[in-house]
Each structure stands twice: as structure tokens, then as C-alpha cells.
Length: 307
Image (cartoon, rainbow, N blue to C red; front, side, top):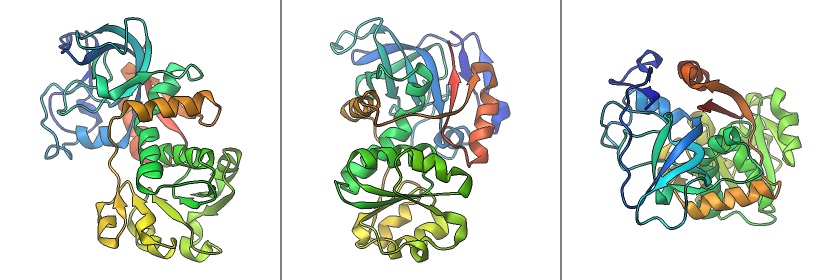
């Protein structure tokens, strides 16, 4: 089987194109997917560098990637929800790190998968799961955003932030996004009611009044200022810094969820959610994809295409 793998932790140079990878096992509750596209996320870089070795068992060689879109090749005997030929997408976070999404065939636990939204290309669908689920779960489960809420989304032009902006708008919120000036029009086109320049000083001083909910995607000084940005600190969530719990807010770590993936798909097909692709790389250029993500300030998502 062809794919990307690495045998040790390190920088982008450890990523190797391999033609000799074994085909993955397919258990009773597993769907074997032929990959078309795989999103590249910051967590992929952290895993490659060994920063998550204490959180998951790791088994080399490791195939990187947690985001996936493709077609079903075959299913385990307990699977009734999918059949060969189905177009699917998923957030493939298994209980251990080994069988990732940048390979021809990917074993996907049933809980991680949903039918691909018809309105999205494979590249777009492959870029959506991790960032989309993070945004959706933060807004609906932690921040409880509803119609009429004033919601502040930090780094709203990035992968999670752009999804969060669109989802909050779909929920009926008045959304304020932060970005550099070059991205202000991009956010307004996506439905932001207000756009603030994060380079122009503390956001708490730029707001006309505190908001109902804040989604922090930056950490550091931005998170330190966040309690002044929100009416009730219980409606402050951070995706990047667990220290938010000490402030009275909530840290969010995304989980696989078929229902939530289906809801993202419904929003996409309803025209409420689009997935801008910053750049799509062929499999052989995955190192360049990792470098682009590492550089930050990417508008939209980075993907690797396999077909």
C-alpha cells in the first residue's frame, strides 16, 4: 500500500513516501476507506514531533493525519451504516497513533465517519472534520450559542475560526470576528457582523460592550484579556490553552462524533458552511504542506490529495 509514514519523531524530513506499507486490519466496527483527500492540522505536526507521546500509545511506522474524505472500500461485519462505494468523510482519531489518513487505505472506526455532503468536493470534505467539529462542539455544547447571542471568535480567518464564524451565524448569533486587516472583507463575506483588528490592541478595549460568549483560538495575551471581553466567564472557551479552566471557562478538545459530522454536512449542503482551501498538495509534497501549516496565518485549510 502506498502512503506517507515515519519511523521516528522529528521535523518534516522524517516524512517518507512508502510503497510497502501493509494493508490495515479491518475489525468488526471498522470501515476501510480509500482516501481521496486528507486535511493537515497543527496536531499532525505535534504528533510528528513527539509532543503527544504521553497522550496516546504510538506505534511506528506512523501514518500521519486525522482528517479524511474518500470512498468506502469494504466494511467490517458489524457495520450496517455504510456500504462499498459510499462517499464518506471523517475525523479519524483512533485510541492509538498508527493508522492515519495519508495513505491509500484508511481503517476508520464507525464512530468517526459520516456520509460526505454532496455539495463539497473531496478536498473540501477532507479539510472539514477536525476544524468543523471543534468549532461545532465548542459553540453548541460548551458555549451554548443561540439566536441573538453576541459571539466573539478569535482568529476567525483560520481553519477552526472560519468554521466557528459560519456555524455561529447559522445559529442566529451576532458574530464578531478578529483578524488582520487583509482578512476583514473575507470575514464580512462569510457573515461576520463586526470585524476587529487583533493587532490594534486588547480586544476588550475595542469592543463597544462585553459579549455573551468568546471562543479563544489564540491563547497567551489574548486569552488573558478574554475575561474582560465576556459578560460571564463561564461562557469563555479555549481550544488552545487548558489554563482557561483556571479562569472559570472551559477547555475544548474535539472528539469524533457521527451525528455532529452529519450536522456539518447538513449545513454545507444548505449553503451555510463553505470550506476554503488555502492550498492542496499532492501526497509527495506533504512536507511542504506541514511547513505551510507550521508557519501559521493560513486563510482556510491545507489538504493533501491522494486521487
